[in-house]
Image (cartoon, one colour):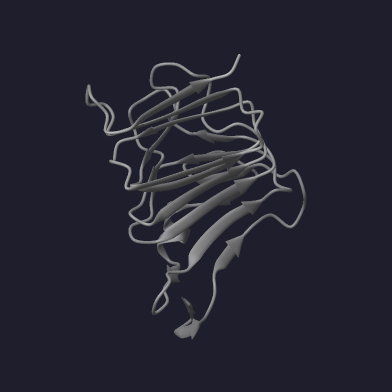
Length: 178
């Protein structure tokens, strides 16, 4: 359910550009279509048994850049026909913080080139990745409690590490097909 103007409406919330190939900025991320952290904070998604999801973008959208998003106990899906990158990819800052399910759905790559602290920085114990891009590179400052990856089988480099920057992560997933 969503609450808008004092009325509860059952379902999920989708925010996406009305045209194809429009770049999306979420939080402090840059894009032609921008969804600020304040806008996300104003959305309440709830249900009795299964929490709803706020979905931003679509597989017809352009690249998506995210930064500075705190989404508390809500499910968040970031969806794009391009790449998903973080606004502060080269620092230890979290681009997304949530205790709900974070779904990263991209026809392109997720994060930036494989290397020290170049991954998409998140703090989310429950993460799902769906991608057909050349790579995904995710650094999670939380400990994974759920982690799901779906690729088309051609994703050459896969990296996901949790509990960063501690020296011994709970889960370190590295897979290179070159």
